[in-house]
Structure formats: C-alpha cells, structure tokens
Image 1 (cartoon, rainbow, N blue to C red):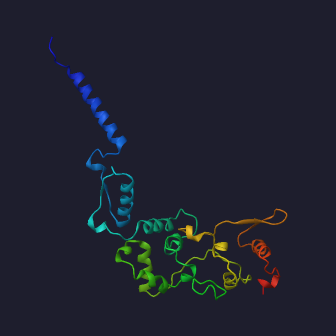
Image 2 (image 1 turned 120 degrees about the horizontal axis):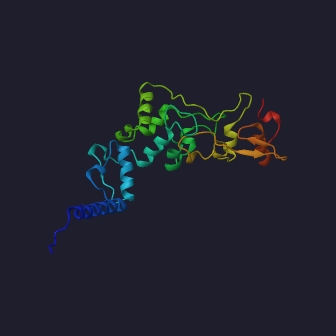
Image 3 (image 1 turned 135 degrees about the vertical axis):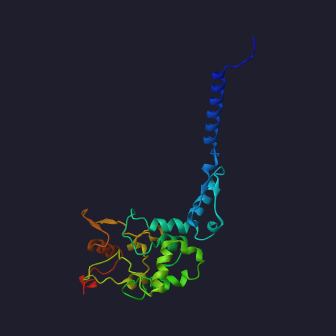
Amino acid sequence: MGTHRSPRRSVSVLFVFAVAGFWLAASTGVPASADSVRHATSVCEAQELKALAADDPHLTIEIPPEYDKPFPTLAACRSHAAAWDPAAEGPQQPIPFSHKHHAGDWGIDCLYCHTGTDRSRAAGVPSTEVCMGCHEQFPAEYDELEGIQILKQYWAEQKSIPWTQIHRLPEYVKFQHQAHVRVGFECQTCHGPVQDLDKLYMTPDTRFWQYGLPTRKLEMGWCVLCHRDNGASQDCLTCHY
C-alpha cells in the first residue's frame, strides 16, 4: 500500500493549522498582519498609543516624527477632550478649560486665577492676560489643542473670554466671598470638588432641616443651615440689604 494522502485530508489539516494559528495570534495579542499596526495622526493620539503600548507589549504602533512630541502631555490631552465633551454635564464654555488639570494635576491655587477673591465681595474670573501669562511660556506643540488656539485668538484680538457663569445667586442676595475665604472656608464648600472636574457644573448637595425638609445647594435654607452650623449670623440683613 502506498502512503499517498488524499487531497481532502490535506486541505483539512491545513485548515486546522490555520485556525490554530489565528487563535494563537488573537489570544496572545500578536498582530496577524501589517494591517493591525496602530498609526498616530496627532500628538494626542500618539500619547494615547504610547500609553496603550506600555500596557500591551504586543501592540504595534507607528508614530510619525512630527507627532512624537512630549507635549501636550497625555493628561492635558485627556482633560481637554473631557472638558470639550458636549455630552458631559455642565454648560459648554468658550474654551475647554479643565479645573481638574489646572487645580488638580498641577495644584494651582484658586486665588491665582480668581485673583482678589480674598479681598473682594465678588469672585472674578481670570482675564485673558492671566491665562496667557502661563501659556505664553509653554511649547508651541500645545497649539495642537483647540482650546489653546482659541485662547490665543482671544489674546490676539485683545478680547475677554465670555465664560458662562455656573454658580449664580439672585441679585437681592449679597454674598461676600472675602468674608468666607478669610475665615477659612474652602472654595469646594460651595463649588464642589472642582479639582476633580474637567467640565465644571454645579454639583448637587442637598441638606435637611430639622423636620426632614430638603434644601438644595445655593437655596436660602442651604445657606442658613451652614450659618447655623458654624455659628454665623442668621439675621436677614446679613445677606439682604
């Protein structure tokens, strides 16, 4: 008897080996072809691919030299995207400013941008000049971020940034920022954990009166309860004058 193998059996064996090879490549994460190479098309995408490759040594990435830059950092790219996300809670601002990146990651004090809050009744917003005071020192690569481009356009045109106010009290309420800051209240007491928020919004905080009646953040009852708990005046003329 000869040792000739039938064509059908040979094809079957080849198919089994092909399937086994595909399964092995998929289970180990080894790219099966050049088509699986991940290509960066921007600095931010390059930063994301580098982070993925650090976690997965089998991932093949390709980063052109023009995108292989240290800036913008991965944290800056992610915060910029999160602050610009229209689906995230909070109003769309003219610039995707991330409190998390500035106050959280970099630890910038609130009073550096909101200058004079410890001396003034109102807490002002930073001027375009204050923003540019820092960002003029940054590498040009940061211009990849749309928010930086918009900021520099406002600066070139010498215009103020029309921020959307989030925490606003009625005109008949005379809230004094400096009085609260000077006695040691943290900004987060009223504004929430801004150092953790990319896109700012009024975080919820409901407190309850003696008989279980709820009162929400910035409502009169919410403020009165805070005054009561901290031994401050509850006279009407303290805030309404």
